[in-house]
Amino acid sequence: MAEFRSVDIDFEVHKRIELARENFAETPNAVLRRLLGIDAARPVQSVIGVGVMRAWSGKGVLLHHGTRVRMDYNGRTHEGEIFDGSWLVEGERYSSPSAAAGRTARTKGGKRTNLDGWIYWWALMPGEETWVKLSEMRCDEPNPSEPKETDEEREIEVKHSHISVADLPPESEVVVALEALLKERSAPSPHPRHTGS
Image (cartoon, rainbow, N blue to C red):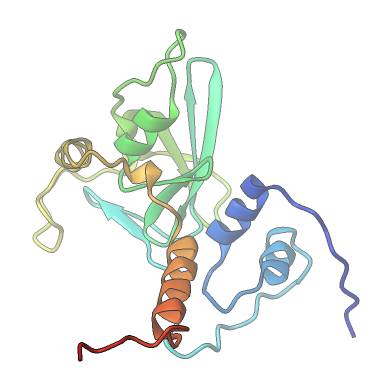
């Protein structure tokens, strides 16, 4: 039988653990065991309704969940991975390589810059040993099954929404907040309402 011990962690570590969860049934302990490579074989998901994590695709490129991504810019290396259909870079989620590059990279003066992520990012597919430049994987032939929206159009849409994708909370935090709200709303009121006489 496993022996459990309490460990104090800060909010950033907690956030990273939550972002790394493969499903809502995976406990923080299971996430850490998986990330630290303690379990030799990963268990098959047995939770009903929990499917396989989504890949990310764009411009003919398909990056599977778990694909590692890396970008060097201005003397600094930025790393992340494809996580359930999005780019998870340094704890933040993005919808495209350009959004991830532009929001992560900084100029020498410390300011954000607009970058074409297709030029800067490299990818390492799960089970592979060789990093491949994202631009070399790109297929500019139109694919009728893909939306015709470009990375730039997605970024413009996000900029004009007054909310940055990076500012949105992780899905796990949203679920916890919604569950708390539903519980609060379903609880009986301590003061009965008076009807007019």
